[in-house]
Every structure is written in C-alpha cells, then in structure tokens.
Figure 1 (cartoon, helix red, strand yellow):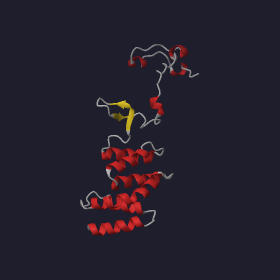
Figure 2 (figure 1 turned 120 degrees about the vertical axis):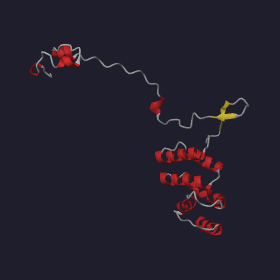
Figure 3 (figure 1 turned 180 degrees about the horizontal axis):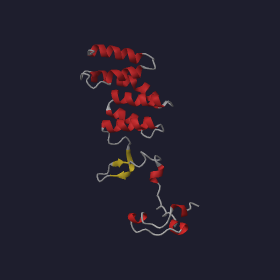
Figure 4 (figure 1 turned 180 degrees about the vertical axis):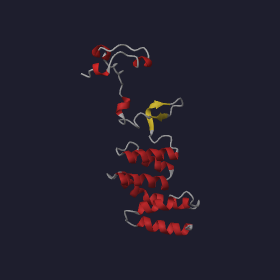
Length: 185
C-alpha cells in the first residue's frame, strides 16, 4: 500500500510522460475500491492534468482508446466533467464503447447526460431534459409501426390426401386408412 506522498510522486511522473499506457497505469492505481480516502487527493491532483489526454482519446477513431477514456474519466474526473465526457460517447457507433458509457452513466447515477432541452418546459419554467435524441436511430426496427401479420393460408391436408377427420387422439389407432394409401405428393 502506498502512502499519499508516494502516490502523488508516482502520478506526477506518470502524467509527465508521453507513454501510451499511462492512462492504463493510472486506472490501475485508482481502480481498487479498497484504496484509502487519501487517494481522492491524488484524483484531484491529476484530473486537470489528464483532461487533454482524455479528450484526445474520446475523439480517437480507435474504440479501445475511447473505452479507455471512459474508464479514466470514471475513475479520475469529478461528476460534472465525467458527464461532459460521457455525453460525447452516449450514442457511439461502437457497441462496446456505448455499453461501457451507458453502464458508467448508470453506475454513477447520472440522471441525464444531455443538457436541458429548450422545447420542454417544467412547471417552474426551467428547461426539462429532452430524452428523445439520446437513443435516436438505434434499434430502428423497434421504432417502426408494425402492421399486424396476416394469418397463414390454411392448408387443407385432409381433403388433398382424402383422410378422415379424427375427433380424438385415440381415433388414430382405429383409423381405417393404411399407411400405404397415404401419398406425400
């Protein structure tokens, strides 16, 4: 277990490097939920310094980098900055990034990651949250009006194959039709 001073020295050295794995290493430091409360000072210490790196990764074309940025934002940033970062990736085209983002929103208890809507007004005059566009365009087949499917055409096998109507299952054994008379054509 590190002391606060050792943690701050290590974080300062990690943030100063240009290494591609520095966010992974910082995430490993803060990922343990059993860390002492003093680690919150370390989070505050690196949050401002990591903002440019996380913002670069949020806009990266690589989904792994965007997922890493979501994890770093969750572990390091304060709630308002996390909400700002997650708003960008809430409707990400990559399923894994979108799932990670939405799980993070649920896990942090963020009620809305969208800014207040201008079309909706609450009773006190403040703008409500416009939730319509959050998932717009996803799962489009669920949003279409579905027509009622047509009933299948009845296939009259009894008439076609000249079979007797049976009232119950026991009538099968007493049927007078032999299997050789039944044609499958």
